[in-house]
Length: 467
Image (cartoon, rainbow, N blue to C red; front, side, top):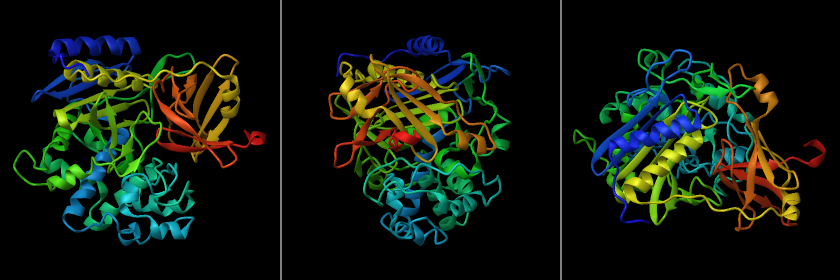
């Protein structure tokens, strides 16, 4: 860590944001920083290539999975009130839950959902409508969801788990999920620029996503939002100003700016204590309660990112330095590299903290042959290939999932260079929209590679005959 680094002026942040957005060809971006007791914002570009308006710090972007931090914190307010117990089985609060494995349905706890150790696969691709019963209908579909392991055995990131937590909020409060989060968090914290409903968003300035077409040209992503049943795991639209305010609450002692104690300090801070370890992930060294926990250049950070159809979010908080940075962008797939670049620039130039990727090993054909193949979860396929000079990784939504969906889905990630790392079976993607993403290959007792972890999610190897 370079202790001599000093905070930069707003003009320097604005210059970096403009240059990076141009480099990555992002139509519109917003970056917010909380440092030295003040807020700084830099925005560039437009909300939409088709109907352009300038992006500013109040422009609404979709937060994607960063929404999970709101769901988890709202749930912790119920814990503080004694209305929910973290170690209680989720069926205490959602008795209607049915899973393919009934024993697992009995054993999964609220904490298992919060720290992604439920054993539930990633998600169910289903639209359960826009009615107030959307979450109840989503939970009714969970009997079709596969388990990737025993409850509590290991971490595997699950959207379905957080949608189920949304149903916990509904059943305990008697409110819809959206209304519960609004009353528990948005209203007392003064987050007046955060919304779930399209009717609320459309009356304000908001960004739309963009994806590259077959020729690489960007076009507007026509499906603007996720389904309502996915709101707890990724449905919030918010602004850089509100997300910075949200980060400031997370940095505090659980007291709102008007003096209300929303959460006991110890419960708020418990959310950033490690509950389970993560291996070989750029997202973090472990999970707290929702938060990814990571040490960067000697300082501890808590983070969460998010992605929707052509929109991306990255939020990083450094509690010991009273610092936070959020980056919002409206283009896939280079929105992720832009966000990472913005967060790293802010860390280095405001705190003197340098975050850099590890260097991969030289190409080893024998090691490459062990890992080449297809890997899948319930919705996606990862393909690892070798050309004699290097490895590549592609990520694609399964064709049957894409065809069955009655809404537009995000673009696939084309093959991009990856390399193996010194730590056994770990790897890093070194190019493309997933650049910097790290993961690892898992083996069975015989030593054969049987799976891959990427983005905190498990993908099982497809037998060669069907790959």
